[in-house]
Length: 222
Image 1 (cartoon, rainbow, N blue to C red):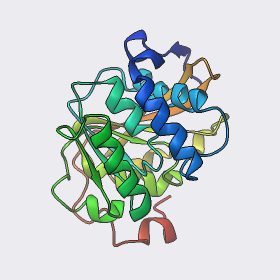
Image 2: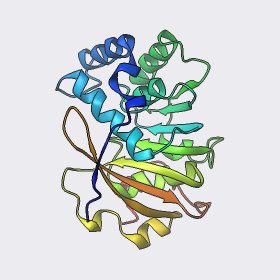
Image 3: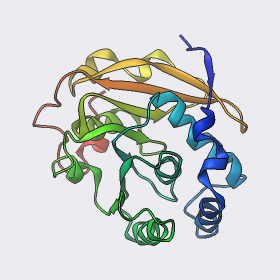
């Protein structure tokens, strides 16, 4: 069942991202950190996460930030938020760290060059109001790696394919890591509609999750 389309909030619109962010994303595409397509469209689609999240977080984590989507975009759009941008690729992480400094966000954004399974067992566990995942991986490993990072009541916002089947987020599988499906979101943007799922932390993620590096992907929970 689809949620009604909702627009990207004007307070987090493309103008808020700034010219410097567009320059950085253009550079990311040139380096192969972003896929094809106009950078302005990719920026607009990243801002759809702001609409799905509902309110600006105090502390947020982006899994698999890559070339800056959506974490870097949202950090610029929400100037009061603090971010951990997680990416295990050292080349991308070094580039991200340089861009964060260039954009003047070093006091509230940090790049974590580690596997998400390790991050979920470190000091960021249970710390985030919001976790985002644009192209981190399939649903099960995304839930297993995202849930341990959330405070109770925090949200995991995940990009979905245009047409999402109900089986994508099974209730029993989500419950195993303390999550529940709040609902699908279909957000209207200047680049077209974006499909997202919002998951909410209803119970602390059990200590056994996330499993060791690679296990969430090789042996998914659902």
